[in-house]
Image (cartoon, rainbow, N blue to C red; front, side, top):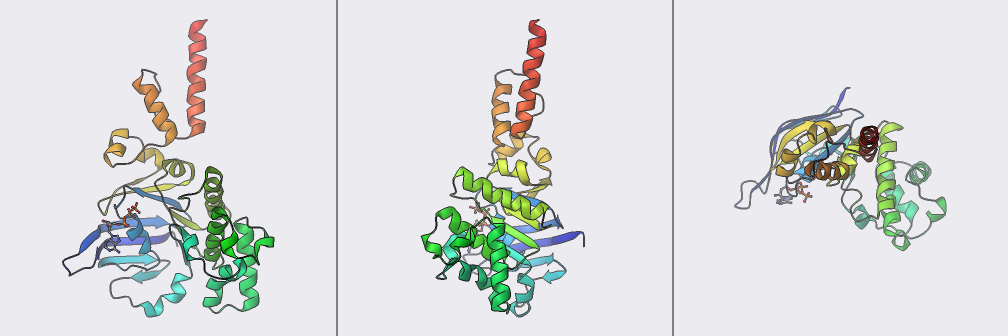
Length: 292
Ligand SMILES: Nc1ncnc2c1ncn2[C@@H]1O[C@H](COP(=O)(O)OP(=O)(O)OP(=O)(O)O)[C@@H](O)[C@H]1O
């Protein structure tokens, strides 16, 4: 199957048919290919979380349909047949450590597989593999998750999702509140799950540097609609449009734009720190040539 996920004219209205009705998605059509790494970006309230919660049918379309790994979800889909399906779609919510509740790390990570009827021994095996995957030392297995650091707690929560061995992993702002090192560890883990374990990764983020460093496809949302889809280079090619969407440029492009504004002939804006370094070296070398 070449497409893991497709949305067909999906509208989602919270509290539909009440005076509080709030249209959060409007006629959204989208394809997310299998094994892609897709970033969903857009200003606060643009509909990102609402969109991704349709992928594991936590929310159902008010109108339209979502197809995920061959399963079609519409407003008429009942919860009855969703359990087996949800096993394949892992969802890491914002601040997932808030959902930890067991007395030990290993029990918390085993909870998901056990809930799906996996034997104790197999659940333990899956939990140990997941701990390894997220870089948690096995000496932490019998500790209370609440005695760990914030970054470790987040990894326990992510391990709990990975222990289910999902094919699709949704990460909704997975690095919020982490220090730079914790941030890089989580993003590198996402990349590893994509590159080595062939997972389809969907990342909701406000971090434009992560978009250019990790995503192969970018979806931009505004007011419940998808306004652009493309590679990071395509999305950030027009800084004026990016600012109009209330988004930032990646930090390398932002810095380069300041050089452009002060008259430095940068040309196409570099998006990553490596591209920026190459561009500056070229300019320095050209300057050195002119000096001679
Ligand atoms: N449970 C809810 N009930 C009513 N309205 C909601 C609910 N959840 C979200 N909304 C509204 O739907 C719209 C889209 O919200 P959503 O959380 O999907 O946006 P977002 O892009 O993920 O925002 P953020 O970047 O702040 O997380 C917003 O106007 C929001 O206020």
